[in-house]
Amino acid sequence: MIKTVRIVAAAAISAALAASCATTPASAPHNAVIFVADGLRYGSVNETDAPELFAARRDGVDFANSHSVYPTLTTVNASAIATGHFPGDTGNFANYIYANEPALPHAGGSRIAAIEDDNILADLDARFGGNYLREQTLMSAALAHGYNVVSIGKTGPTGVQVRGIINGAAIFLDENVGEPGGPSLSPQLTAAFAAAHIDPRAPDRALPNRVQQNWFSAVATQIVLPLLRRNGRPFLLLYWSPDPDSSQHGQHDSPNTLTPGINGPTSRAAVANASSNLGALREALRASNLAATTDVVMIADHGFSTTSKQSSTSFAASLGYADVPAGQLPGGFLAIDLAHVLNLNLYSASGVPISLSTPQVTLHGSHGVLGVSADAPQAIVAAGGGSDLVYLTGADKLALARRIVAFLTSQDYTGAIFTADSLGSIPGALPLSAINLAGTAQTPPPDIVVSFRTGDTGCATPDMCGVDVADTSLPQGSGYHGGFGRADTHNFMAAVGPDFRGGFVDSAPVSNADIAPTIAHVLGFNLPSIGRLRGRVIAEALPQGAQPAVITDAITSAPAENGFRTILDRQTAGETRYFDSASNTGRTH
Image 1: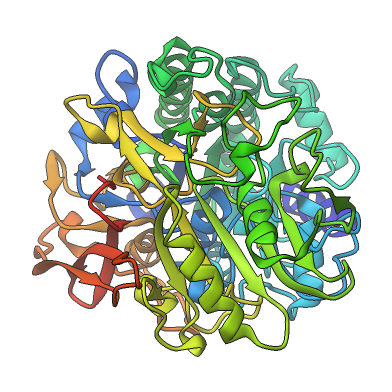
Image 2: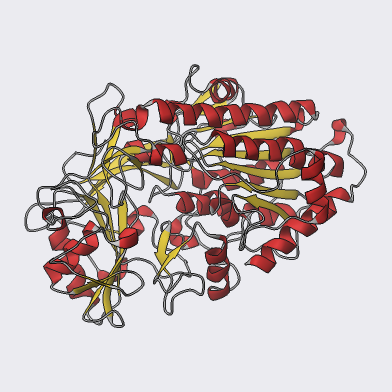
């Protein structure tokens, strides 16, 4: 990945500095900016905490019925934003996935690939045909139609946007710029940093993450936008803000308690941070005389919840750990519980044996390999916070799947269960196809997806005090996402600019999978597709656009022996499905 990224950054900046004649404003084609505030909940945007985001939503289109793509994780939604397709087509099923044998070259011997890593993204491309997503990205299509393309911000999701782009065509800058495996700076870009008196290396994250956030903002407004302006060609720019996600995960405002959880001062400061960065970006567009020709789409990859580690049924919670309060769920609890109930040995993702009788620390990474030996696994658990993926790698998948599902229906931490269509109907579970996780993906699909229990602390707006049981080493009271509650699916979404209506509240369902088709439409080019699990053009948000007919319903699985049923609440606009939440007994909001 090091060589590829170096070529991308250097050649793109060189092309930008070889500026063509600027197009006059009257004839200028439109540009698009996608501003992603990682982990921003719809309800977090108000006039006090996020004035710039609030004003943009008020003045443009307010997507009030917004949806994160499930699983509600960063790279899942990064792939949806990049391609307009759901995970069943992109193969980006979670932040951590099983990518077949052997382990990827940069995975450190782990069977689980951590997608928020530039080197792992390159490994995935190498293993899966040059573009692990298979679908063409919006940036690749824009590039083919003469646009400059830029992806800047958080490591991982920014790299997802530029898959399939080769020969030095995109400007790509993330948190690892200048570091081994990260984007490298060309001489021209190095000079631009020096001229702007900006350190060419990104600061580390902190709580709150103000310094790093301001660095990205300065790079975008003082270096990248001036280059694009001088170049004169239309552009597509994605800016992925690490906050509020980074601070909401790491905040210490609520140690071992569910309130205030992610509604404390650290999280609110992170929201304000992201809002301020948006304000700086829009002001730079105005100062560069680009605002009148630039659409700004503001979204979040997912919502957020406060982490609960409570269970009265889990075997893992009954054990003693040096780093977990007594009686609480440790990181890796699902892998531990499954190894126990299936009477299988447990190993870390890199093959280190894990003792179930005398555990001293949580399972490293929360992922687990189950089998007679590490070299002959029968199941692999990829932990993902509010949801885990289970890959079955043994001979009799169906029998093992039925045992696992039956066990999951007995656990108080289980919210909803989904199983591969190839396994047939399993009581208590809905098929993966019901949530757009079965399509044309190249990467191995999971056999079982379990969303953990969700709920709230009883506030007036449940989406704003959501609680997830999460398979993570982060403690109770921290923040997480990935689950199937409305607090995690209700992300922030808005748009403002020349191609969008003003002062319009859209009541129809929309999701992150709709962003790429909509931007391609307003910029006037086609976004090719291979798979059929695709979002829609949000026509009602455009001038003279018609509101789609919307159907709201729910589907329910066959009952398990103990009566457990998975219930999926959903909406349909035209032919596009949107998933509100999934539960089993109405505990999910």
